[in-house]
Every structure is written in structure tokens, then in C-alpha cells.
Image (cartoon, rainbow, N blue to C red; front, side, top):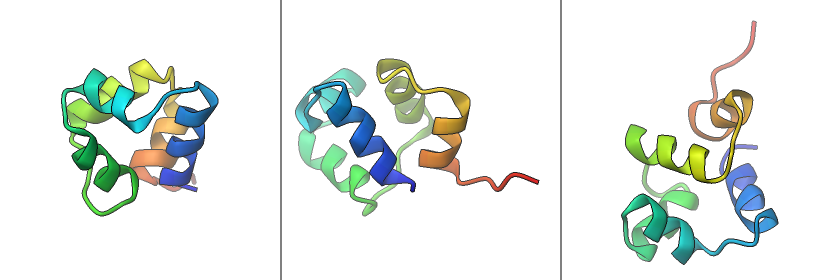
Length: 70
């Protein structure tokens, strides 16, 4: 699921890549590359995005960490 879940959460909230990029303090091109998996999000960016999109811990794991459950 990963980054597709991030995009769907963003779209469901009616937010553009530009809006999220501005909120977390990066430019739109950088955000686009990260949302498309070409670059990785920093820990600080993950924290800001999860707060801004109101992601729960399971969603943060599914999108950014991909830690398998036992």
C-alpha cells in the first residue's frame, strides 16, 4: 500500500501536494518526488505529515515504515 495510501489520504482531505509541501516546509517538487517514492521523507517530515493528515500509528507504519506485524 505505502505511498498510495499517503496520496489517497491527502486527496480525501482535499489537499494538494503544494499545500502539504508548504505545511512541512519543503518545495512542491521535493514533495512530489517523495510522494512518488523517488526520495525518502525525513523523520521530521513524517511527523509533520502524520499530524497534518491526522494519521494513526498503523497508517504511519503502512505508509512510511512498512514494519511487518508478527
